[in-house]
Length: 439
Image (cartoon, rainbow, N blue to C red; front, side, top):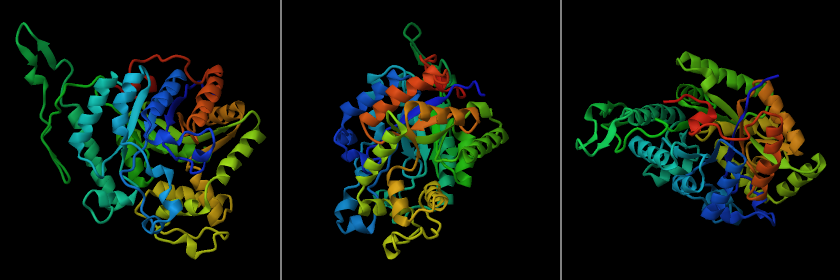
């Protein structure tokens, strides 16, 4: 048995489950409702979670249905959400210990802006900022940034690799103690402890430094979720926390070991990297009650919306050209998120699901479903932890507030009672609470 303590982050993204928002007790206005986000963050902090995490897509997903004005396609609730970077300062002022992480793509940003924004959040939050580095799987984003088409997968990762090097270089452009503010001597900062980056690479030319000293963490925590070959390489070289879509314990253990071996090859301490599979907890007083609740939420997903939601990962296939009650066809390679495509194919093949069944399951969210009581859900989480299949989990509730409350107020106390999750924060920064490398 392992004596490890698990890490836990809460992923809040409106419409993650494409039916749950229709429940009578769901508050869909969380999509652009700051008061609801504050409440969610405070719930996560009360449960002593490591961080609250926000995804971002800078475009409404494009499909033929949406472009033609199809009601269901246009009503996808995942289309409506804040720029998560705007949320973090507000949440920093409403919390004291909770880590605050947001997605910012390397495909449609400049590294200086990203480095500056997250360093600013690190100062505002007193050391609780985290950056989720992605290369954008939503191909529609290209048209919002002056491009006709999404850059190729390999090109996106090559750019991202240089991008993160520039960002971390900028974060390191000030030494500890560089900012003096010495009134007596009239010295505001020590020029010798401020460094110009002078980066010139294939994609970026950046002089630096940032317009602020070294932030409280030195470097905000870097999150990453790539599962492809270049994605794993980037994560192992640069990430502190790696999210994954793994749903099989043995496969997750192999994924974690692969990341750790790659990290060691880059000269990093594998024990300072946390691998967190995503889970969607569906909680009931009994297993049967939880299963019935899952089916109720699934029945609220319109068929057309489920199919439309699956389309961006089809590799160009139109599922409506096939028998929706027939088997999932082989999916061509796609320029979108490869981990999602792989998850769809694995789900359909492993459970012998039809196209429609697969679409409905994927519309529940792409993460592993833990359906049961607080005890049975905690049993599974502990089994994965004890078998080195993970270092913790990214919890992705179906809806707000009840889905969030069920996890933080029912499942987390069970984990705490077992001694595998903290009862109090012990660190002052997100890096310290996670137990990752410090700078």
